[in-house]
Image 1 (cartoon, one colour):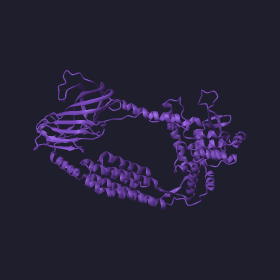
Image 2 (cartoon, helix red, strand yellow; image 1 turned 90 degrees about the vertical axis):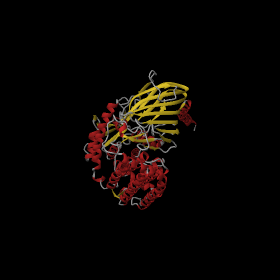
Image 3 (cartoon, helix red, strand yellow; image 1 turned 180 degrees about the vertical axis):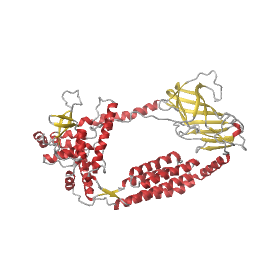
Image 4 (cartoon, one colour; image 1 turned 135 degrees about the horizontal axis):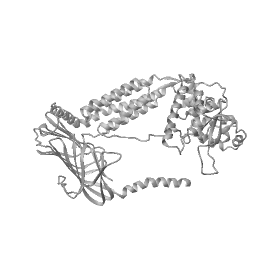
Length: 636
């Protein structure tokens, strides 16, 4: 326990330091006053007055606005009215964030003080002009805002009067804010606007007030917009009742998926009913070709490290020999420690090889000396001194050659028809997709969605569901569908308990579909799968037998490497004095037995191939403005 104490202390320090850092300083936004004037050309002139209280030292504030913003300026002021004149006032430095162009940083140092800051800017293309009405749907803050805003007072004024006979005002918000309409303005007030809340307002006023603005359409849209808002208001008033009515159906789908999954697991033909003896299963495991073991372990697939199994397959057939040699790619500063690697030498050039074996040798065995053609394991491992461009070039070459070899392996006759479809799985996947689509469709009918969202969401899920029904046995397609089914409700549906239950339902259904096998293995493959799982368990628990036969121990070291337990089993073998004596006596015949620890070179922690060492060099992101506003306020 004592040797772990320093590491525990380091971890706790790392966890505590950020917390201490956060406690050293904090800020609050005590008041927000916003005045927005819509001009006759449709441009909105905005003034925002924030009152900040800083506890600690800060470099400035932040403000993001997801609209077409122009001429953003910031001023420090002690005024209480956002409409004050700014002529003669000193502007604060404003710059765009390097990673997010819509996040503006306003530089003004503050420390243990209360300060007022005025923002002035204009917004274009947010007001839509039709033949009969002008429409502004806007929110100054949205879910991206991470700061609680206190005493929020927002005033929006149009070019003309807002008489109740010729204008309409709607509030799309679930907080306790108050919306007041007068002849000259619309005012929204709320004591506390919680972080992430979206107080969206919609104002309809006569189109003739925008005398200098261009129309987006010559159609009369007033009646249609009012009909949409009335429907939305009706939904809002009945939302809780309708949500409670759909809850039993969510439970029915979720419990039904779990019940069907349990039933299918019980009756599934993949359940192994044969030999259960550990010794017999291990013998079955050890007599199987290493590459075929890897192929079955990965469910008829081969990963980037599978070429090791291919090399060990050739070694067991006497076509290659392996030995531990000094590594020419690494120079260790410690003179007493020599870096080594594994060398595979092609010794039986007259052996009959199929296309996959022949390609593997032609691909990897590019070096030659007096012993013959050979391959060094470290030649496909990324080296620290190489540049990213070199690694990327070698990674592309490796992946291209590996893909060709994998295709040749998969074309082998012995690798064909290992499993067949399980007829119960398509019925299960199709029924759950239909049920999930029905729930999504029901939510679009009762939740607070726009008319576009009401048809767009069912259309997206309908097309996706159709793809799942076509590829009903493909778990990647099913996973993509349920990932969308979990993500989209969080983006579009109201944050209710029923929405959370819906997400849980889809997650449970997806897990059920992943657990149930979609295929049935051949009887001999079932036994091999059981043998592989048994060997995996024995290696993991360090109970895998070592034995007294050098040849058998050598093979077991190879199989341990294939399953990812080379290091552990090598250490287990290395503790035996008898094995150490054998290794020195039979080092030529049993090279791994000579140094069991060398098997760890096959492990993924050591085998950092070029394909795994090169990630995306850079990522670019683009952002587009939105006419619906939103954004947030903070400090840095």
